[in-house]
Length: 245
Image 1 (cartoon, helix red, strand yellow):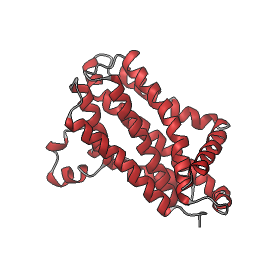
Image 2 (cartoon, rainbow, N blue to C red):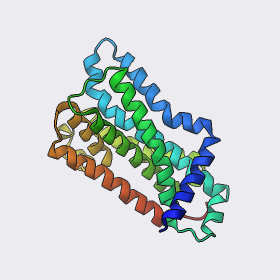
Image 3 (spheres, rainbow, N blue to C red):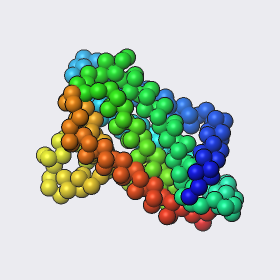
Image 4 (cartoon, rainbow, N blue to C red):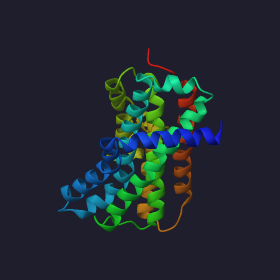
């Protein structure tokens, strides 16, 4: 891998996104709009928003980054751009790292906007540091980016890329502990939830929600989410194809 090639790839992706305001709006504004709606859905019981708001602060960015990244990467392949790039002295690792860097920069902005909105405008009450909440939200967005890059290799069209969402995201959403504590699930479902990265993303948010200091469980959750993102990026580089068959 070459840092110069990675940076050049990231710069190219950012230039393309600059001319795609709808994708930028989807990435930056949709999580904020969802949090805003959620807050006023539970306007009569603000305690409910405090309970699930932190978890969704991580889940919404993960979902939006997954959708945008998978579709954008697939579009590169179906248009022939990816094939032309890989004909140059550009490795798959450089390409995946460049995409991850470009979308990661957008994930920083997205996470900062959503966290700031939740804490200082919508009144989300957390015991821990807002910076820790931002850290988990950012890692969740990066995980969504990595998952989007990975699944794009297996889709032949943008419609198929969207269809991966029920297969990749929805099971994690149901088993992450958002709807019921994971230790109250059936043993088989709890075992599955223990290997899904979104479970640790939600656990990390809940640690910040409940504890004023950094706990060992929080460190574990952050490392699992970060490690999962890196592993999926490596798998994405290994399975990257030049073109859609």
